[in-house]
Amino acid sequence: GVGGGAREARVGGDASGEPGDRWAPRGVLVAHLQEHRGPVRCLASSHDGLYVVSGGDDGACKLWDCGRLERDVSFRSRLTYASQGGRVTALVSLDDDDRIVASASDNGSVHAWRVEYVERKGGGAAAGEGGEGFGSRRASPPGVERYTGAAEVATVSRAAGAVTAMIRTGTKTLCYSTARGGIRGWDLRSPSEAFRVRWDPRLGVVTGLCCEASARSGSVKSGGHDPRWFVAGTSAGCLALVDLRFAVRAAEWRLPGAAANGSRNQSTTGRGVDALATATDLQSFGDSRPVVWCASGEDTIAAWDVADGTCQRVLAVSRRLDDGDSTRVG
Image: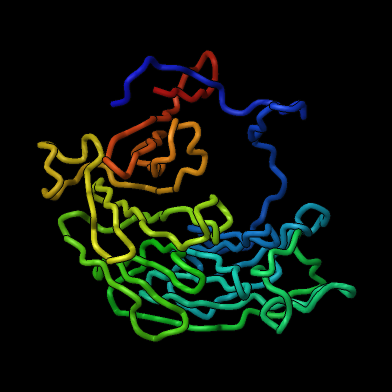
């Protein structure tokens, strides 16, 4: 549990534009994108906001141009990558050098493919075609005249079951988990594994991954280094902290209620981890300790300090018929 009295705050709100006024989402529908022939399971966006890629059970990855969504009346995808097979389970955008997207499938494969396009006249050459890429720190996304294709860069398949989660851990390095093979690292420049984390099956199948936010990912100033740690969440309600420098589990703990006796080594059928995200607004927690958000169970999100495994904050939706939905912070 978390100490302190419960406080309630309404979700949403209007931003006046005055200095110090914090923006809050209002839930206004901008566009309805309906091309997938099944459930959409994952999304990834380029770091400069040029495009968003969606993937789902139909096995297709579709690219949506964010600029066109704001001004066009016909909302359609600009590229489709459907050469992987299986159902797409995870997407990651790699933008430092080339505009590369990595897609994972339940057939156990991971594909890396480059987004190719032609810039409008007066702009530089398209990324991936000898031109300026995201690594040049351009001030704004390039103006795209048309998208020309999705070129496969590299593929990997370890025959270890479905890929369940995937994150970026370096400029050309991915980390992904499989249903039977634990957690593996893949450097796109090499056919061999970059690293492999030994995994105890009693911890459960990995269902979510998140890593330390680095300056290279454009999220948090951290000296320009690649992530040094990541957290894995499992179907058994376990969180594991992994030291990327040595590819070993440094600590692990179970969510409240996940194990009847509180043992972190006992298999459990308790609530699993649905999603993980690295906290970026660390000032709200009072210090610079590493914190991750964990979604587990219905309408509940908790912030965990991964250094000592303590819960710092809980956000839960309170269903009240007389006042609509509200968020309880306790």
